[in-house]
Image (tube, rainbow, N blue to C red):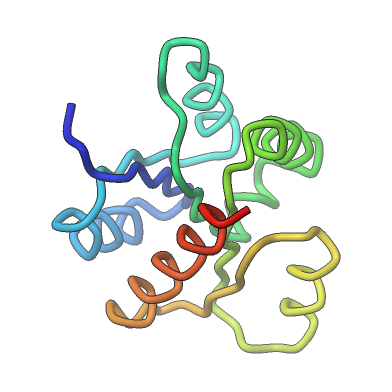
Length: 131
């Protein structure tokens, strides 16, 4: 097991998962999930030592899994103080409002710019470590 921080990336698009994994692999240990349900399965392994340092969650994966799964994910990560970045392929103000309403730590627009993504992840993890 590496000493790198762990990022759980949840996206229903397999190509997006691979792109993000390539962008992050030099700096982070990346675990992927194609659905909220699979993310919950990963998070269920907290008792076995798997606690991500951050979750990057695509909004469409959230909606395909439903709000019930999102609430379960949020409950788990809140109890463990794991930050959450929500992503979507839109800059529409409604998505920023949704991100604020569901109390995520950051919102990022797709397609990702590698440096922007890395900077947001670093900033959120650093902010969390100061709490």
